[in-house]
Length: 86
Image (cartoon, rainbow, N blue to C red; front, side, top):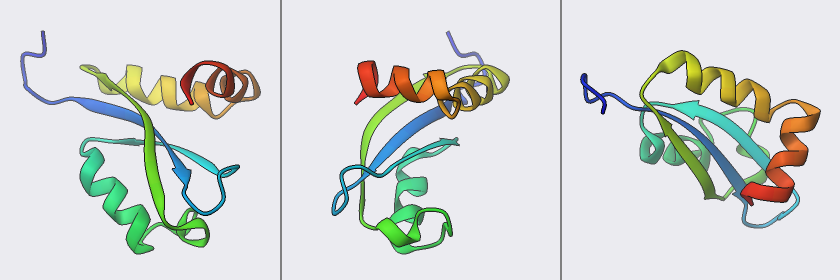
């Protein structure tokens, strides 16, 4: 149970126009962050707009979320994403 009602999210988005393009990120507000990606506010994702959310996971602890995001950006994390999360 989350006592402070704050959740931390790790998410994966996929480009709608280029289905081979994925981006993994961290946010405290997925809806707002997806809107940022789709409006071009993120330099890393603006080239492949628009995006759709394909996966997210909620964490009560910020460090656990950041650690999972970091893992998903490694070679083995990308392999895990491709096999299990998309």
